[in-house]
Length: 234
Image (cartoon, rainbow, N blue to C red; front, side, top):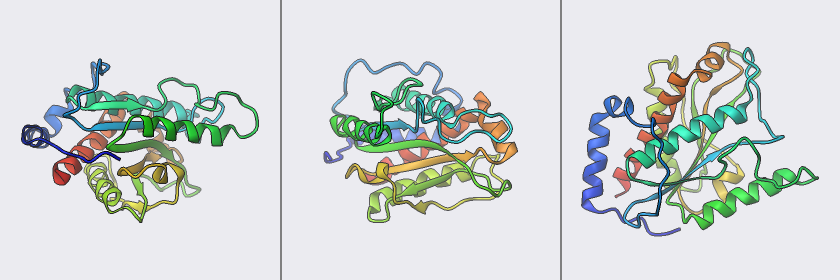
C-alpha cells in the first residue's frame, strides 16, 4: 500500500465536493470518461463489481434481475463519479463476464485471485466492492457496508459510506456498518469495504435497484462517503 499523501489543493477540492452535496451528485456520473493516464497527485480507487459470468449472485425477488448485472451498473456509475472528479479509478470487472478464465473446477478461487491481482497492480489507495444483499426475511432492506474488524482505516471508510447510504431519502431504517470476514476485505492492506447496496429479497428495494435514478443515487452516496473519508484521512 502506498502512503496516502494529499496536497492542500486536493483537500480544498474535496471540501467543495462535500459542500455541493446533492447538487454535484446530479451532475457527475453521466460522461464517465476513461482516465487516459494516471495522475500521481491523486488517490487511486479500485471499484470491484462483484460476481460475473456464470456466477450471477442472487436474483431480484420480483424482477428476477441478476445481482451481477446490477453490481456492474452501479460500479460503472461509482467509477464515473471518481473519474469526473479527477481521481484515478480502476474497475476489476468491466464486462458481464467473470474473471476466472475458464469454467472448470475452482473458477471462483481464480476469479478472486484475479481481482486481488488487479488491486495490487493498481497500487490502490481504496477498494470498494459493490454487491447486493438477500435475506429470507422479506422486510429487510437498506444498504449495508462491511469492513475488516482488524483495519481501523477500513472501519472509518465504512462508517462514512454507511452514513451516506442511510441519508438516502428511500432509506426506511438506518443500518449499521458491520464486520465481515471476506476475501475482498483481506486481499489488500489498503482500506477496503464491501457495499451491499440493498436487498433484492425486498420487493420495493428490488424495484428501486432496477431503476437508473436510484442506482445513480446509491453510486453517488458511495462516492461521497469515500471522498469524506479521504478528506478526514488527509
